[in-house]
Amino acid sequence: MPGALGVAALFFALLGALVLLGKVSVIVVAAYGLLSAVAFLLYRGDKSAATQGRRRTPESTLHTVDVVGGWPGALVARRVFRHKTVKQPFRSIFWVTVVANCLALAAIVWAGPFLLT
Image (cartoon, rainbow, N blue to C red; front, top):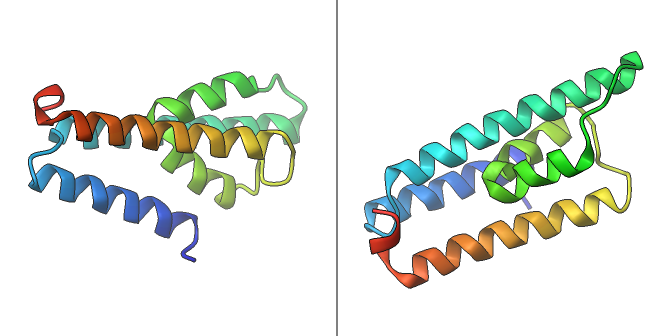
């Protein structure tokens, strides 16, 4: 199984294919990219705060960004910063957000390109 970066790259490749097939707009790819960057930065900031005893980013905030499309960036950040990789139930909830986001994307693609083109 590919690592976190590989999974994120495969997901973006899938999005690219969906754009080429006319199933989603390039705006969707840009939104996932932006949200992934935001998630990456939030996880980096939370790890920094955790190691320096500063105020942390609420887990609900991290999960919200993940479920709306930032999960690829969060997946990479979790590995890069070795953050939120052991703690339960965070891990389980993270994967629920990934599945929920992917199911929502699949529903949009299934409903037809008229929604996001």
